[in-house]
Structures are given as C-alpha cells and as structure tokens.
Image (cartoon, rainbow, N blue to C red; front, side, top):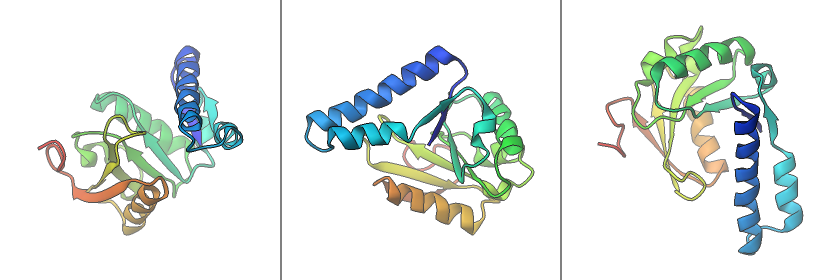
Length: 163
C-alpha cells in the first residue's frame, strides 16, 4: 500500500490515524498486536507520485474538486503502469469527465467509500462510460478483498447512495 499526501505533516498525521485505527482493533481483540504492526509495515508513506510505479490499483481520495482530481489523474497517468486501475473516491463527481484526462480512460472507475470508510460497509463502484470489464472486475474484487458490500452503479448525479 502506498499512501501519498502533499505535505509531510499531513502524511505523518495520516499514518498516525492508520496506526490509531489498528490499535483500536487490537484493543477490541479483533487483531493481535503483531498483526497490527505487520499491517502498518505494509504502508509506504510518500510525497512522490513515482512511488506508484508498481501499483496495480490506485484510489485517489482528495476533496471533491474536479480540477484537483484531474491534476492528480494526469500525474498518475504519467507515473503508474499503463494497465493500473485508477479509481476516484467521489460521492457524485462525473467519472467520465475525470477519465477524459487519461490516455486510456478504460482503466478509470469511481469508488465511493461511505464515511467513515473503515467502519461503513457499503462501497459504490461506479462504472464510467469507457470503464473496461477488467477495470470493473478489479474494482469489485478489491471491494470483496477489503470486506465491503460492493455495489456496481452507473455514472449519474449522486450515483445511488446520494440521490
């Protein structure tokens, strides 16, 4: 897992929050201390897009500002493998508009994680008009892998959960 942020202090705060969530799982008896430490060790914090070069799937999760998301997707298009699936965590932005900045828009889809994401079970996976079957299958498999109830929805205002 690669975790990127724009500033070191934000990245450090994110890592502290992840550690806090796993510590809570240890306190509740859902995870051993050893397993929590091993999970935390799997996270690579970074300030650079170059660290995404080996990722098979990327989930962008910045604020709901289309221009910002487009800027990030353009950077991901440069630094990720050509077949990496690029997802945006959005509750209603147009996935087709975002995908339009990619050389290959078929590798883009939406992933709407409901907040707080580490507690809420629902995941809306959003099919864009050019999302490939491989992209959708990868997104659905990712949802299952992280124990979410993943639903496939179309790219429309508010998707399903925010109508």
